Image 1 (cartoon, rainbow, N blue to C red):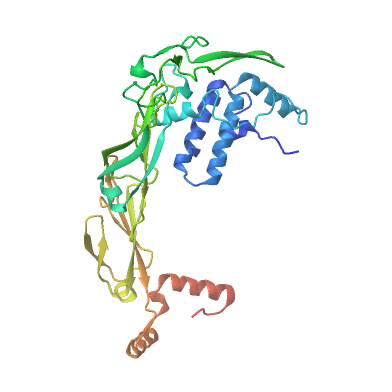
Image 2 (cartoon, rainbow, N blue to C red):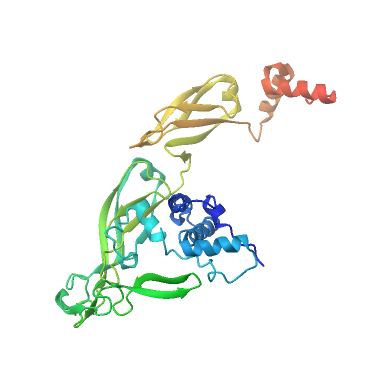
Length: 376
């Protein structure tokens, strides 16, 4: 028999945690492992599923009581009908959390399943466009609320009657007897599908659906500093509700293409600058790139490979501030030598002293002290 998951450990709370502590831990974990922040990461997706499973159980008093009993009495199956549903419903469910993180607008006591589906679009940006900011056009299709019937699905938006089963509320109460007593839950009215009304004459434009599939197009200004998985939110620009509620939201999520030279961490830029060994040894000028052009930097004599040059204020300029540019010097030796170059290097090697090399000298001393042998 598989070992039962410890939902308290998954959420990072104690067995005596209060409802508020569980809710706070759940929100924190969901934000950390949300699929939008880890696209294509199967481990994060599995973790996200476990977090929702844990919350669905621990946020429900009766399910939690049955779960605690199972933890304390392993092997006593059948208590509470199982807890591995993994849904996004229940106290502090997925829609609730998504709303609190991204401003989904679930207020006013509105039923969660009455809101239209969100749309997520992925937009590719070049490295420079993301770093400097740009203007882009967004084009997509969505189920848009029908203007002819105002999204009701009824002719002229008036040809309907109030649902007799739910009294126009769109929700009904369902009672169920369990081992812990009778429970009452609120669910979508099966007669009207949550709209609270019965259509007497369908809209001729949308054929009673309440929406039409239409193309949308608009321009958006992308601020400087956009990064992978950052996004722009357009409220109410998602799909129309299937039951006459508010439309969902649109999320334009950015994917930044790599650059030939730069690596990026936040607002800071990193670049490797290969330097011929002769310039590193003798000193000389080398050109280093930045976002706008490039600049000349004088490499001092004896520059070592791995030396990092910090240029403040040459990173990405975003609303939160401007980052720095970090140029790492990579000293490179030639892969091929001419006969004259080899002769010159052999003469130089014959005249050099290992004491001119700091690391080589320390390595030589350590080898001689440990093994009594000269490494060179």
